[in-house]
Image (cartoon, rainbow, N blue to C red; front, side, top):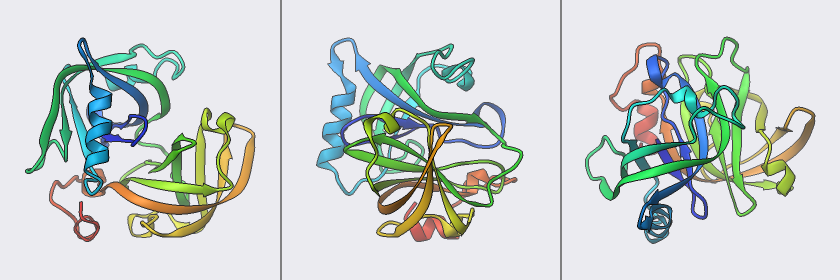
Length: 236
């Protein structure tokens, strides 16, 4: 799972289109050992390494991923899982550093979750927004291969209200293809339509900040674990 957040801890499952990985899941979580607050360790390390984009964690037990959001995201079958290790960097790539071992991740809130594949992908570029009033993120809405996983920090005008932040938030950018090479880039300003919950839609302007993750090779019909051209260009 990808770990993002400078003030709160959010976990984004790194999905694929087969087996136990076939779901997009974003969680707000607490990270805790019996004698220490691992979440605080992560937040302190993130603050002291502003140039590091990726933090990841490796679960320490086998479980069915859908238990984290079914039968109901508000009352899932599982609300915690053990973690083998928290890493600064990608857990499967050289150069990472272990920050903590053998702790528990507790699900505070299921931000977003859906099974993969989604039969009908949106024609326009679509993101799920999540976060708090002082930090906001956009995660590309994943549907079917070929697709891409992308998490980027954003700011919105007008800003989100506290009530809106508690609901599902989906941003659609009209006239922009739902493809990896058309994704939102750091430093870019875009206009889009934001759906909040089931009934409210409003127009917003978005300023993109740091890209925390980008992956397309593992989300192809025939996955590849070698870096693609777009991944190399983006530094991932």
